[in-house]
Image (cartoon, rainbow, N blue to C red; front, side, top):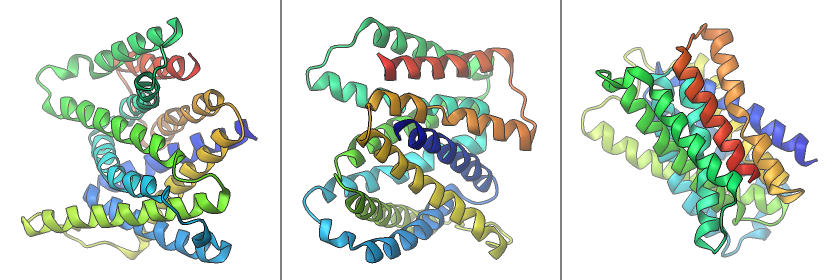
Length: 285
């Protein structure tokens, strides 16, 4: 069960990242976050009502609220980085989010083994190489790498918080719902501020109704990935779940290659690969 749900997590996250990156190329990133998460929150609200999830309400939901505040910052940073591209570099760098749970373990008294130390070294080298020569004289690429690292920190924090928000399946539905509501409130407030400053919330042509299914897919795939990861971690070794779930950049990279025909420089591909290897070493150490 752990392997099945963790692999499902990789597939869902990978496709959600790809879809979110594409939408952000046409629509402001904050709008993508707010619309997609609003749809996910509405669907989760129906599920919570149908399953009686409200009975699981308790102090643990504050973890979900915190995850909902951090989440939009991570998603916004990640979608902007994906829009700057290339996806085949940005997505693997985001897997450095695994370093956050490792750091929490260190703070609580755990000590890294040789494999984890090697993973940290390899991951850092991967970050440097993934920027490649484009870092010199290319502010857009520097910004993409920085945004991706901010997103990784946010994602890792969300992983730590959401695993503490529930202990049962119905409780997980409620926690994910609360998280999404907090996402919408936080993202909506940020969008309001941006619009007040004169930045449009929608493209010049407006938001076509035909794009709503894409927004729904991104929001629902993202929340489903959070759910399948939580189930995988609760029903088996967390290291196994983390390793298999961290393969989602492969899905994003394959989608970008298949649909967008992206081609990476050799040094970028090597850096992205090293970042992924470093992440796997951190998870298995």
